[in-house]
Image 1 (cartoon, one colour):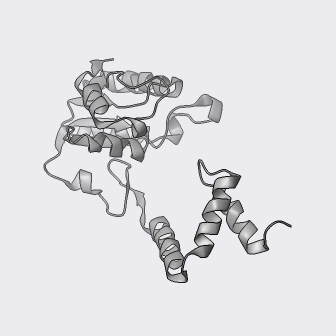
Image 2 (tube, one colour):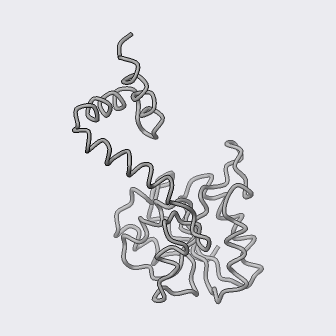
Length: 198
């Protein structure tokens, strides 16, 4: 046995995190073991607190500790425009531009039949429920230009257009297959400015 049981178990659990392979998990485990007990306890508490307190915003489906979230509760946000993103990290990427002032809706994924993900597994019903009751004039689809993103955008466009709401998509200043999370602020600003009708 290469590791003692507790260390092996820690490495095994760390490997379950996205982007963490065996070597990275081993490095992280050794780093954590070397830390003072109070530091490790702070990390454990932060993980537990996040898991216990974070939930979906009842309005936009973003991850939040408050309901509604800070963005939905902000009266300065324009309720006539909703920017639809696939994941919370994409919302953060758009917010970093400091250019967008509307509301958001987080789908919590993309349509992907190969992975068994259909519209029913996403927050599509919640988005559609927001449109008739609110003064929404435009829905911006800020969805990655991947195969799954294209399928999701086309699906949403077909559902939203008959409701009399303008549907636009951010311009493709982003590489095909790229994620909003990795785009710089200027690229996202240009993509928002260059959005087009679907």
